[in-house]
Amino acid sequence: MTVRPGWSGAALGEVRPYTVTRGRTRPHHHLLLTTRLAGHAPGAAVALATPEHEALLRLCRAMPYSVAELAARLRQPVQVTKIIAADLLDSRALILLGVGGSPQSPDRSMLEAVLDGLRRL
View (tube, rainbow, N blue to C red):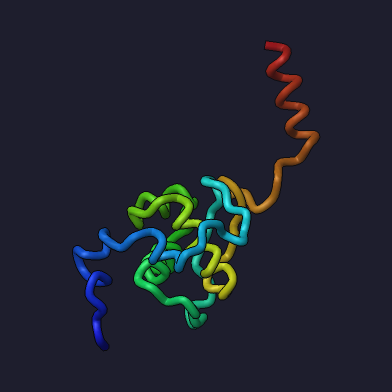
């Protein structure tokens, strides 16, 4: 395997975000900072297998992480992390767990009960 200069070891931090995202500036999935992602389908082929894609996938296969946590661990801007994650979601290598670990939005009646309880305080 040939290692491209600037893409290995300590030099990874020097790769420009524009290069990592291949010029894209927006992900095509709506991902919040608290959106949690997990690894899926260990044999899934990743079409855009860059070191950043592989690192994100490796993290998510170990345990679910939020987009914010992934950005910090990858030492990449959040927007870059969202684009990388969107690529992996498209290839079905990642699955979306939801926001803050909840796969669905909270029940309206439960939220109203909490609000009523807070008003009584």
